[in-house]
Image (tube, rainbow, N blue to C red; front, side, top):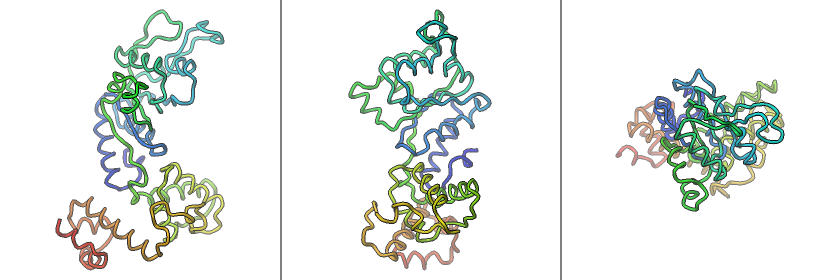
Amino acid sequence: MISNSILGGSVRLAELRRFIARAAGINWSVLIQGESGTGKELVARAIHLNSQRCASPFIAVNCATLSESLLESELFGHERGSFTGAVTQKKGKFELAAGGTLFLDEVGELSVSIQAKLLRALQEREIDRIGGTRPIPVDIRVIAATNRDLESAVAEGYFRQDLYYRLKVLAVRTPALRERPEDIPVLARHFLFKYAQEAGRVVHGISAEAELILMKYDWPGNVRELQNVMQHAIALGGNEIVLPEDLPGLGKRAPNGFEGHTYHKVVYDTKRHLFENAFTRAGGDYREAALLLGLNPKNMHRFLKQLKLTYLLQR
């Protein structure tokens, strides 16, 4: 189940999958940190779906989109008549997630007041509805995510230290897309064929030139930006293969320092990167590295000599 939801074969994703497998078997809070668009909610869902709570609800709340008063009601619920407009009783997300997982996205945006109430809920495993007269026991697992540096927020007094450690019982960082470029072609083709099917278009793949552009772009918006680019290619492209001109703006700039580099230079550097990564994943075993690259092991020495990578055989 993990491999079906987390796409890619990079070392960083292998580490992430191992974390998900371990975390799924332990009923403790998890803190997922990483840049926007790196799939933090996807990781949270994978942990839930591989846990013993998988048959119960997975409830997600974005803590950055609601005011403090609305968020308090959203999380903890309220009783009828507890404030103007509260015409009926409302259960909060803590109650709705009973037996399952509550995912708090952008938890770094919580106000100090809500932080205190969240801390109590985690410590006592019970909540108070707004206007309520008795505590309500809750059986849930909390997974939180943020793109902020919570350690700095704690040091600056914006985030409670005790809550930080309550949330960070288990912690993981989702890698940025630029940190795992070998996954870019896999993700690009996945999104391409997905949106081609939705749009009723026939698309066979991505040209070598377009793929190089995708791999050398730094992706400040991460996977979410790549997804958007593939949607654009499907919506506005007119060919059965994605060409450089189908990639909006990506071919006009080279954020990773490839300005002025020739096509052959880019190809050479890309091959070197792929071979180096394959050897890392294979633990230095050239036969295993060859299998990862889809090459005949008998030809590895020749390739490594051409790419000036013979040092890899001496590890």
